[in-house]
Image 1 (cartoon, rainbow, N blue to C red):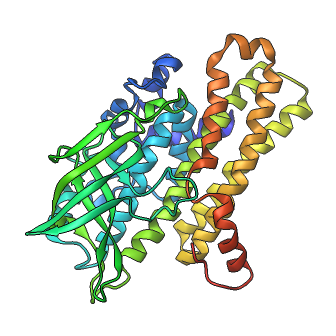
Image 2: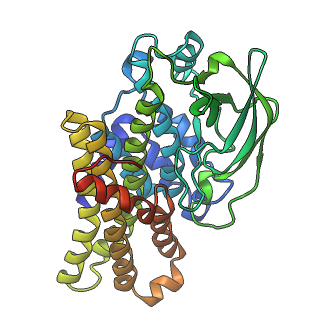
Amino acid sequence: MRTLDFARAVCDRYHPGLIKALEEIPFAQREAPASPALGLFRAHGGVSLLVPTEFGGFGADPVEAVRVQRALGAASPSVAAGVTMHHFTVSMLYALAKGAGRLAPAQLDLLHRAVPDQILMASGWAEGKSQQNIFTPSVSARAVAGGYRLNGSKKPCSLARSMQLLTASIALPGADGSPELALALVPADAPGLTVHPFWGTDVLAASESEEVRLNEVFVPEDMVIRTTEDDPHRVADLQAAGVIWFEMLISAGYTGAAAALAEVVLERERGTAAERGQLVIAAESAFALLEGVARAVRDGDLDSEQAMAQVLVARYAAQDALARATELSLELLGGVDFIRHREHSQLAASVRPLVFHPPGRVATAPALVEYFAGGPLAL
């Protein structure tokens, strides 16, 4: 499919040979729990995509990033879903690094080592709980000499077995004694951090979405990002960047999976031209919405509140369009294909989890309605 080939070309420009290497692995093995796919992602420089050039990365802009994600989603929905957690974490941390004094020297040193050491970052926000706010801490923190002891778990946590760093949201007492959101940077080999089986479905199994437990894990003070009197908006800026990038990237990966299935329909010329046209419109419109938001973010046309509202609208509209596209693809491919080509039904199934990622549409509806009626966007 023309637009999918274009996305593959963009991906190959940043990660030469990655798509080919993924597609050389049989689909069932590629999407299985013990898949080598994430290792291939690291080996082909995947960690570097959104890392700014001054930190040794590729510095891809939002438009290029969603195109790369679309290509990855077509080759391996698991990889696209899993590495979204790395990319959106990178986008948050390096956004803070742009301001002088916003990160401690130890934190900046970590960011400078990300590319040379190929540090794959997992996200320990509260994803996965039904209607849970994405930024509600799922890990508790207790102050001790020199830092904090962390306890809790994150499930599911994508990249659980391949990560080198876990970023975990925690609640610390603020200046007035009320809980204050902060971010802890935890090495994957920290004593007390363990990984346990959690994912119970074949769909997206290669994303390594397992349970990560923290039992009295020590994190030094200089590896915790929190607000200060001089920079009271630090964590708010981190939240805004995280929501925008997460929604763009996770959705783009799913558009790739749907496009890969539509591509089979076009290659086999299944159904009538009118039916294939409906399929193309559904699959392409979903990505067009996301690409449009990515372009507006890249060009600075939106403030952070506008960008969050627009990316959520694009994501929810894409959910509906992708559902129509995958249903029509399976229908046009027919019952015999469904019986004999398991990878096609698995591709279709791999598109549906988009509805489960936070923030959920039902939970977000009041905030979006209030925003478009002229109020603030209070997610």
